[in-house]
Length: 360
Length: 196
Image 1 (cartoon, rainbow over the protein chains, first blue to last red):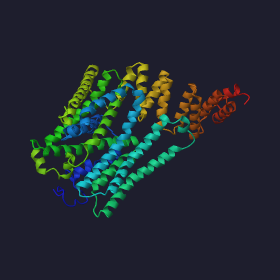
Image 2: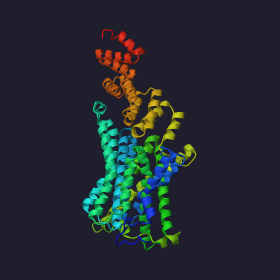
Image 3: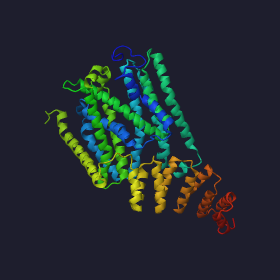
Image 4: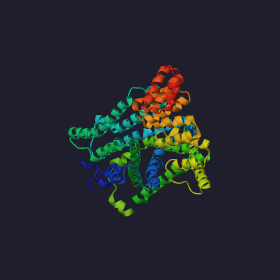
């Protein structure tokens, strides 16, 4: 495979994990740039024309992706030793805090909801940044620390836009006096102008940065790094907030599942006791994610309803807790420190086609 | 005890916590499955949110239970305009003023430039005696759409309640100017505000 080696320059395409088509469409988010315009063009503005399939789509993509971080946490080599609190105590801590929040849902519910809705775009931005840097590392494009810092802030722009919108719409209305909220000063126009500027910057600055890298580093960063930052921007900048959340949830889920399964399969294939092929490990990991996703999102709220809580707080706060748990776990399982299992995966070449073929 | 490596010393209580966490999760999950099977005669369905459950509650539940459930949903799910709308209409039917205010405030966060919503909220606030807040919303409604007679009637009533009779009379006159058939404005100008 042309891009399978980890030494030498990788060119414009970069060094992909599986195949440029797979990496660019699923991990880079390129698929969203094809599917979303197609849906709008042929199906009109509603996000999902056929709502009958929406729950299945959510289970197989979104719920499975949330479960994937937990499945990865407990299957990643060495995580129980390096992350004792996260692996051992965090589940019961999460359940305890969730239960307390459900008890006081009318008081704290909206804050829990606000935390998770604000944290989501931060999480997506952080993932886009991480993937962009990872592809640079794999492709032999050394970014300076100032370039990394610049990339980080560029990746955060869509998050800042969403945060500003959400804060001005909701948090302000909960705490500002009515006279300030609805007075004569048209502060909403300023907020709208600021969010539009942030949106333009989120689309333009990645191009500027990649131009700088090209000129200063005398080598080009892989296009997939640019694509992953731009698509995250498109999801939140081009579409209205709610549509942005729906599209991001779907394509972030696909992106996440693709990359986490690559890491899982690489770890398993490197295990000296391994006796299975790639397809087995993919099926096992994805199967576990779907089962856990179903249990978390569809069974757990019924458990709280059995205890006498209402359907809204049971469903909404369970979803919020799963999100927050996922964001926290994710902050730890993707570390690329020296000696970490992830580092080995990033540094190694593509999955050998022969291994895939032997399993199929 | 000190000879035991720290990681092993920690593993005892840690693994107990882990088992307890898993046990609780399993109890809640299995309980959820049993709940669904007994209630709906099927495994927990794949659901998106809780709209279907609330629809069922609207059709079969008592008004008090329904408004209470919708209030909780609207309080948590502030991003969902449909929740707020459902709360407003159900709370109107039940005469639950706090529910109406909560729902209208939620809707206003989605549509801050909707003069009609500001006007509606002002009326509800006026009825509950929250006059200063009501006045803020009438002013906002007038700033957004100054050609609606009804909002001047509301403003006149607020001013009257505040004892600001001259401003009340001015508001009612403006209402009559925009809608000469406004009975409320005519009555107010004929009796309590006759000398203004």
